[in-house]
Image (cartoon, rainbow, N blue to C red; front, side):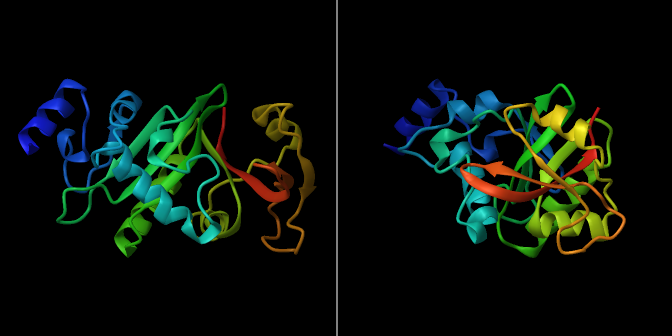
Length: 208
């Protein structure tokens, strides 16, 4: 029976992380087509492995806004990278994004809950945001980490932020942090996110 299932997975072009050409400790690009082809409810596959990381990372805030189950991956994200750090044959951290006119917008993350997984996700985020053509909307703890410990630049031009987001995502520009935090950084704004009004955000990185 197990051999039959493996043959069926191969016929469907389903993959698990172990099937990809990866090296321990090295971030690997994942083809979104491989994620989509692996959405089999009967087997643990690549989409399940990645979703587990997303679910762990977003559990403290009640889950990811866009992904409620593994069958929804890869969604609109067309950039996926992940890394395996430990002895088991599964990924431990990931970053996903969307290619936009302003560059790659980092939009989803994941980790296995371990210190190594969290550190890898944070370090990769900072690395990408330091590169031209990479940016992200951030808030709360991850924004704090990027600003305080990695000196990631903020986009402080309200018109540029609105242009990048598009008119369908209107912002209420604040400039400075509403509680006076991060003096000298004037890129804070609020907007509606997934039906939640007045979510505090800042755009970080180097959009085109």
